[in-house]
Length: 92
Image 1: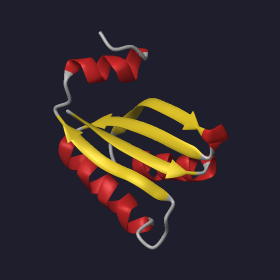
Image 2: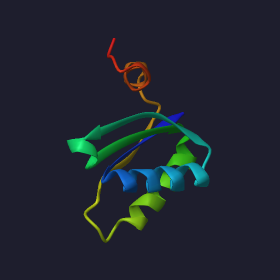
Image 3: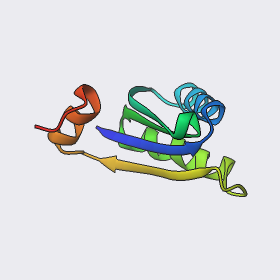
Image 4: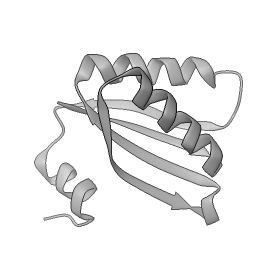
């Protein structure tokens, strides 16, 4: 199990990235945040490591000539505390 974290400018780009990733691999969105009135979007996906690596690499390639993509990372085997934060919004 892994999580993929995307942080991108603009709400519409967040929709496009989510659509691309979810059509490409078997995963689900477990958390999202809108900052700066929707101008900065963070989306967290849960899936297996290899699938998320493929999808995140594709997103990096898609946005490599822009400054819109701020973060695109995969965390393999995330700690339970981090997962609880993403699912419930609180650290325990």
